[in-house]
Length: 188
Image (tube, rainbow, N blue to C red; front, side, top):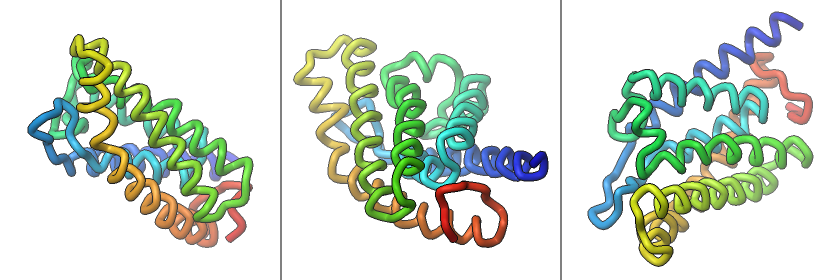
């Protein structure tokens, strides 16, 4: 039992690193303070593969690393100020996102379709948190907050949700089969 827990904690640490690495895939938008990043793909993968407990641990570790000054946030940003800045709502929104994605998958069959539904719901949760926070932090109107922080990310968000779902199910099953991942709902 302790060995399984240690494996999962190591997986969580690895996924914190993966989130940090994919966060560096960042494309700034000229009209928005919010860049397009690989972060949301990594969040979907962590939730799909690790589940709600260890996926959340990986995310909290990632957020803690960034908050203490390690440049893991998008574009190499770091520090507590990023968490309370205009894009902080997306980062904080990842907490319920990862939990909701994993919870949905854990309550259904571990398939690409169910993972896609879960990751799509999660994408909207992140966008809602981020947009509300952006509106408040940047003193924007609802129209501008939606135009800068919500609408531009829907199509690419759906693509990333699908990729996270397909890869997450494949990788999750292979890791479970190799005895590197312990998830009851994954039937390898």
